[in-house]
Amino acid sequence: MPDPTVDIGIASLGFAFGDDQDVAATAGEYVPDPERVLKWGYRTFHRAADDVHATDLAAAAARQALERAGTDARALDLVVLATSDMPEYSYWDSAAALADRLGIERTHTLLLNEGCASGINGLFYVAAAMAMRPETDTALFAVVNRVSEFHRNRMNVFNSVLSDGAAAAVIRRGHPANRWLASESFTVPRYNDLISLEFGGAVRPLPPDGWSSRTAPSGYDKINEHFDNDSARLRRFLGERVDHIREVIDAACARAGITRGDVDHVIYTNDSPASITAIAKALDHPPHRTNAELSPEHGHMGAADQLVSLGVHLERGDLRPGDVVALCGISTGMQWCCTLLRI
Image 1 (cartoon, rainbow, N blue to C red):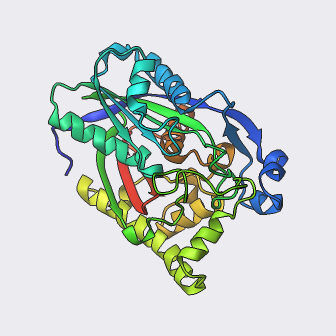
Image 2: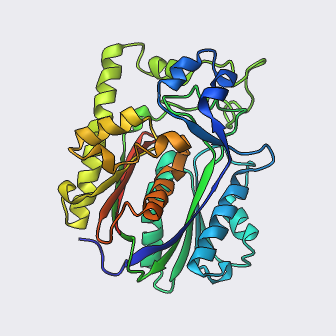
Image 3: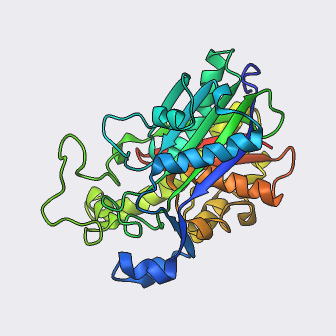
C-alpha cells in the first residue's frame, strides 16, 4: 500500500510547445523517403525556434502551472527538472538554471536525465524527497524535450517523430486530486547502447568529418547492429518490450494495493497510434482509453509525453474523479517505468 506520509497530488499543470509543423509538409526535409514516416500516423509535431531552448520551454510551462495554482515561485520548496535530450551547455545544471529563470534565490533542486523515463520516475523522486523532508509542502516538477537537430534527425531515430515541448506540475502535500499512488521501474542493462549517440561525450567529443544528422545512418541501423542483424533476436526484444510494460504496470499496481483491472486509463509514450493500440491490447485495456488519439497531434516529446497527455485528458474532461491513470513507457537504458495517479 502507498505510504500515508507521502500524501501528494498535482494541483496544476502548465505547458509550452514549439511551433506546430505539418508532418506531411516537412518530412521530405528530414528523410529521402517521406512515405515511411507518414505511415506512422503522425500529423503534427512541434519545432522550437532556433533561439528557443529547453530552459525557455521549461520556464514557460512552469510559469503557467504556477499561475494556475495561484502560487509564487518563491514559495516553492523543491524544483525538479527532467530533460530527455542534449543539454544546452556542458558542466551546467539545468534545474538550477530553471530556478534562476523563475526568480528563486534559494531552494532545493534536482536534475533528472534518464531519457523518456524522467517524466514518469520524476514523480517518484518528488514523492521520495517530500517523504524525507516533512517541511516540503510545494514542489515544481518540470519536464522538457528540445531536440538538438545537430545531433538527431527528428524523423530517423526510430518510429516516432521527435518534437519540442515541456510540461510542468505544481505538486502539493495533501492535495486531494491527481494523487500519486505508486511508481515502479526496472532497467535491462544489456540494451543500454541501443539508441546511444557515439559522439558528443568525453570519449568522442566531435562528430566525424562531414557528418550530418540529415544524412547519417538511421536509428534502425544502430538497432540492427546491436542485434548483429539477427531478426530472431530483434523479434524477441520486441516481444520483451510488451512483456516488460505489462510487468512494470502490474508491479506498480501491487505497490498501490490494486490490480491492472483497476486502471481506467493508460498513458504511454507518444509512439505511433498503432503501437499504442498494440500495447493496450496486450494489457487487455480499451485502446480508446489511451493516448493513441493525442499522439499524432504532438509527436514524441521525450520525457514530456505523459504529463502533456494527462493535462489534455484532464482539460477535455476525459478523466473522472477517482479514476486511476497509469503513466508508463520505455526509456534509454533500457528502462521500463510506471507511475499511478488517482484523479
